Length: 197
Image (tube, rainbow, N blue to C red; front, side, top):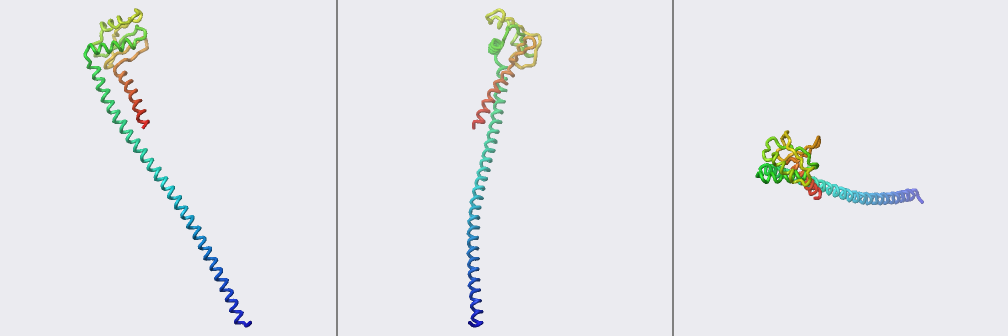
C-alpha cells in the first residue's frame, strides 16, 4: 500500500469516525431536546394547574369578601331598621292611653314581684302610677304576705315602667330595659340568619 493510500484510508476512517461522532452528538442533542421539551410541557401543565388554582382561590376569596361585605351592609341596614322600630316602640309605650299603660304596668308588676314587699320606684315625670294604683295591684295578690308593695318616695329618670327594690336588690322593669332585652333576642336571631347564609 502506498503512502497515499494509507493517508486516504486514515482520512476516510477519520471522516467516518467524525461522521459517527457527529451523528451520535446529533442524536444525543435530539434526545436531550426531546427530554427538555417533555419537561417544559410538564412544567407548563403544572404552571397552568397552579395558576388555575390560584385564580380559583382568588375568585373564592373575592366572592367570600363580597359576601361578607353584603352581609355586613345587610346587618347595618337591619340594625338601622331595629333602631327605628325600637325608638317608635318606646315612644308608643310612653304614649299609651292611661288605662292601657296601667294595665301593662299592672301585668309587668304582677310578673316581676318576688316577695311582695318591694318598693316601686317610678320615673321622675310619672303621673299614671301612684299609691292608689299600687294598692290595686296589692289587692290582686292571693296571699296577704305578697300584697305589701309601696310606692317609693325616690324617683329616677327611667322613661317609663318601674324598678322594684327590696333592700339592695333592684329588679329593673323599665321600658328601656325591656326593649333592650327584646332587641338583644332579635339581634341573636339576625346573627344566626346572617351566619347561616
